[in-house]
Image 1 (cartoon, rainbow, N blue to C red):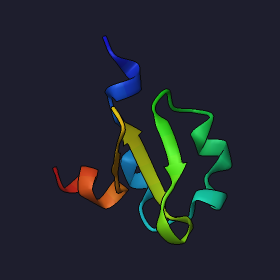
Image 2: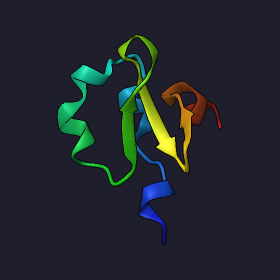
Image 3: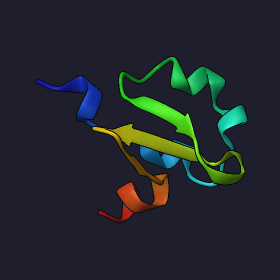
Image 4: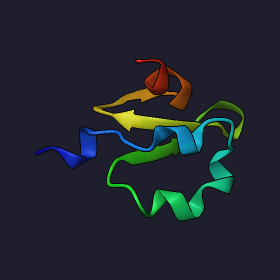
Length: 57
């Protein structure tokens, strides 16, 4: 019901840089942004989450 806030397939982003995931960013409806040191972060309702953090949940 809320695709912008529903994360899936996050393991594909673990250990990768933001600059490496340009193709994958186009495949998902949620917002992916660059974090510190070009790391991948998910922007959900204004808060940034790491792929490792989401996977641990």
